[in-house]
Image (cartoon, rainbow over all chains, first blue to last red; front, top):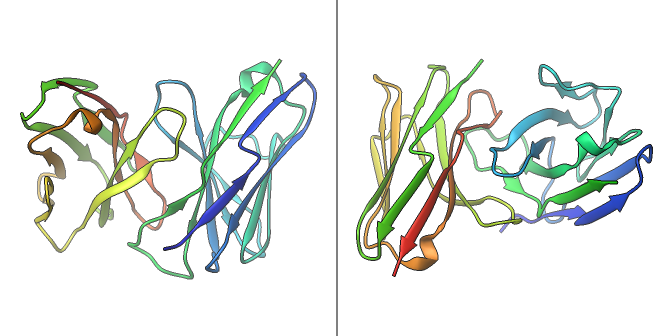
Length: 117
Length: 110
């Protein structure tokens, strides 16, 4: 089956640090990847849609300068949380859609738990 | 944009009983409706999905129904087991974006 690898799984760092999270599709090409954020005991909230070779599309209320997304290849999207602060602490999960398919399941990474001290 | 509501937020059942979780959506363009099970600290796992051209789908103890007219869809788990305990999310997908419901914490007591 389609596998999505997300790294790192856990990050603990000081306030003001920038943190990069990688999302890779291991056995398929993903034109589109998605980034979600999940606070404790809450649902997954879509942050942005990452499109290979073009700018990401951000959901309302998500700061594009705070959450930098790069999708430079068909198998890799990165999310950089710039100058992270304690309120950015959350569980970040990526997903990928194979090819240009629609109405198909998204394949999720294992998530990254980010803790800002 | 799409808005997905999910009820109940918590559900406790005795082992062997059935559990039903209900969702409504707002965007008639949504045509794909997956259900996910998420254990603490883990990724959401797809357990069943349904497309808008189908009214019902079953996979062993799990079934999903869809009423497009009313914009309702439901998850039914029969013969529940303690290992079914988790948080369940419905979702609706208009134009490839997945919009999740608020989640249901299911507890199955032995």
